[in-house]
Length: 214
Image (cartoon, rainbow, N blue to C red):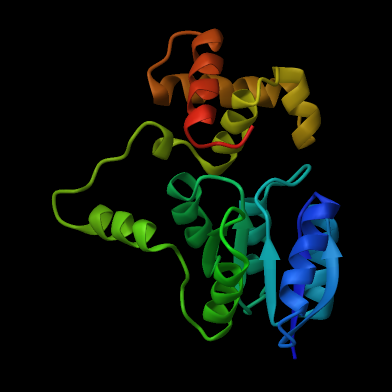
């Protein structure tokens, strides 16, 4: 059987995914992790056939974890299984080194299909996301929206503003200083054409209702 590591900060989600995956009889979940350092250690030690990673983790986010794993030589497939809007995060995850992206709202059969696809060497994203990516690389379709201009870390901070968190709360959540959060905040205001911190927070909350989970 193919071996899998599950990385998600919610035990009940890991339990549900494990049941879905193991009942196929084709996969064995050999380890679980809820935060990035533990996930990195287990993946590098066990070398699973596939790592399934959520994007919302305490401290280092999932995209940064994927970059870290790839930078240290892990070659096997990585599949992102996340609640976060595919339209915002899938392309970033693939650029970081993931082989596929599937949302948690999908049916169990779709999750299994995504796992099988990336294990077989394919890239897995939804049909609608495939069209979005193709349009983005077509001549004359260039140019980034404001949110797409944000770095991966800035996007993570933006998402937390969208959940209503304040600067110090975000700093605690990500394990960074409040001053660093304020630096990200200033960069995001500039990139998004916003004048104040309150405008940024309001915009992030508005976007959260349109795609980001709360």
